Image (cartoon, rainbow, N blue to C red; front, side, top):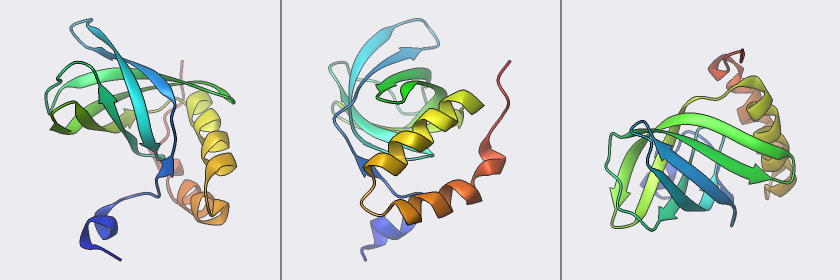
Length: 124
């Protein structure tokens, strides 16, 4: 296992989902999501975005829409990594269904999800 893999907080699921990323300033960008986990995503945007930028992201999955607030924690050219800061319960349930349905090892994902229940906040 590589050192970069060991630092990851959650298992990533490969995907080709489309998403909409909106900055707090209101600028909206299309985002191609390469991989997704319970704590964030990695994707590509046509626009260059800044590390540290807070934003909202909306993903369309077969389980329904997943909406989260997060922070861009890493950028490289058009690639970015987004860490989820707030994931409402309904979005958590949809994200959970997507991850379990698409994971190579759903049991690992199920264990991670159980460990992260404190991450959730009830939505209004």
